[in-house]
Length: 317
Image 1 (tube, one colour):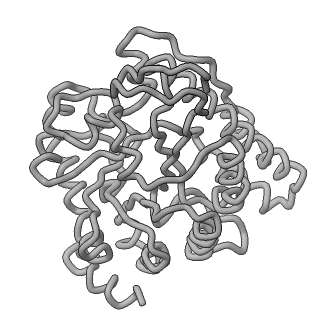
Image 2 (cartoon, rainbow, N blue to C red; image 1 turned 120 degrees about the vertical axis):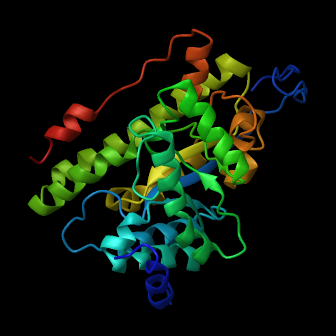
């Protein structure tokens, strides 16, 4: 389908410490006796398609399940980052974006075809980013869609690329959607589809338990880095994907974060934290938008982190 024509398709189809402490980043002091305030912005990547479909499920059904859960948990309007190439090759997937917007959630740019800036030239990446814009303009109307989530979280393999894309983003009014909490949730979507197809519900139970364990362990992983770097909890930005297992697990996942003391906030509010200064102002020289990157910049070792990749690849094969 010609890229200049798919806008018409969219229009047709979318019907704790007791002592006072000084914050080393802000210079402000915490009141005595207060517990840490934990805040988390939830975001989703790869709209409208992420991971394989289990038997009997649909892309729109997954989106409907996710937006219902977000609403029931009183999560503020949530950004979903779009790869519009799927709409060109499967126009029916535009209804996923329609479902997302009809629920009051928001859309941002994840590039047209999920291309990595580490793998292509700067002009190619800029072109792919621009190709994603018409559908965002159409569906977001007057709301702010000028947020970029880098595919693969890759900001460029050379300083020339990293500097060049920041110039481009500044000129086009973009901010960067950072990621400061991520447990590779997408790794569970493929195994889930396989296990459901085989009706191996014992393995599905293991997937459920390991998913929640990974999410829980990663809370400690990221909080430890934040405290080591800044002596406090930053406002975190969570990366999830619009996959079938994410939809299945989202009620329990959000409950886990609440049990661990988190409240849910919008992306814009999260990135008011000083940690994200390089993301919200691309005119600045490049700086860390991942806590892992900030640790490496200070030559600090990363905390230990469990890896379920081998087990996930092997299960239900």
